[in-house]
Image 1: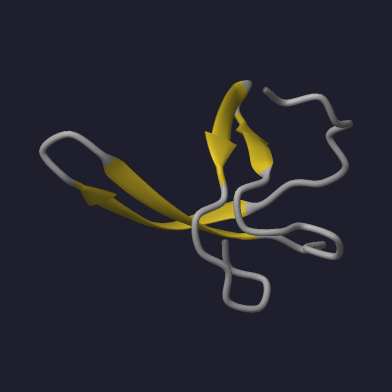
Image 2: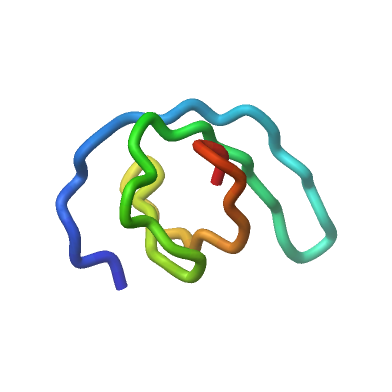
Amino acid sequence: MFTGIVNGLGRVTSIEKGEAVWTFAIDLPNTEGLQRGASVAINGVCLTATEMDGDRV
């Protein structure tokens, strides 16, 4: 459940549509303290960060 404060805006850089799961890559300006498994609010929807590579989640 998302319990944090929204503190920035990101940009969706790719969307992969699977049969049951869609995967989004998002460039975030501030990933400090963000860890794999953390909740990220995307347009009011709580999603889980499953992979991180620098500023791309």
